[in-house]
Amino acid sequence: MSSDATTPEPDPDTRPRLVDLEPVTTAVVRGAVAPAELRGFFDGAFGALGRVLHEQEIAPESAAFGLYRGASGEKLDLEVGFAVGREVRSEDGVVAGRLPGGRVARVTHRGGFDGLGAAWESLAGWIREQGLRPGELRWEVYVTRPTPDMDPRDLRTELNWTLAD
Image 1 (cartoon, rainbow, N blue to C red):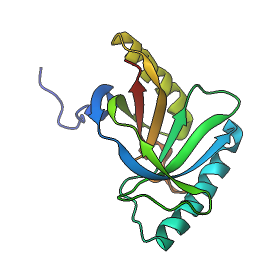
Image 2 (cartoon, rainbow, N blue to C red; image 1 turned 135 degrees about the vertical axis):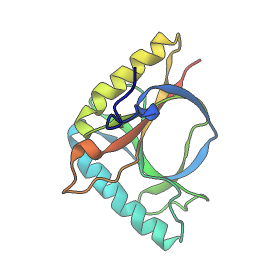
Image 3 (cartoon, helix red, strand yellow; image 1 turned 90 degrees about the horizontal axis):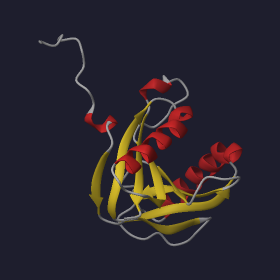
């Protein structure tokens, strides 16, 4: 059966897969944040990160990310930041951090941030289907920088979940 030339090829990043990662040095702002306060926390963190990285002459080496520790609850244990080439000096709430290395389940979510909860649930199910157990750390890489006038369907967010096994 021939395919229609106007039909796009499936994006391989939208299918879960396992990847092996090296640890990465990061500059982050940490907090315990209620879900309703996430936007304000992210906005404040990115403002502080921008100032501190600029003052310390450190260029981000990645898109922004949000790393979550443990299970979701009333408060989320969260780090917001960027990969960097050298450790940042602690200042204005910005501290040195690390994205973990090792085996990680990864998928790319296409669409608005309101769909991330379902995307995480789907990735957790896929991990279990592989006979694996999700670990304690998971993070989102905001591949597409959001702007006020963009179509949320154009957003791309990479989901990464460490494995317990």
